[in-house]
Length: 73
Image 1: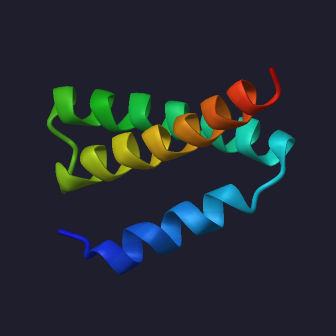
Image 2: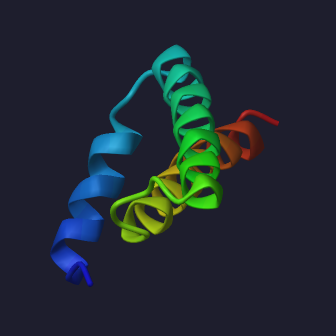
């Protein structure tokens, strides 16, 4: 499990990205999550923790996008 400092560091890095970079990262993480789930179903996934990491990173990006969208209203 990551400690709180590394999670805060990840959120800081995400918050520093531009809007178009965030959208691209969102698409990239969705594709990665899809491919990891497909590998898990076919038995090719080496580490199930990769799915969790991808899911959490995607959630971080989505949180930042939603925060920016609500701030723009």
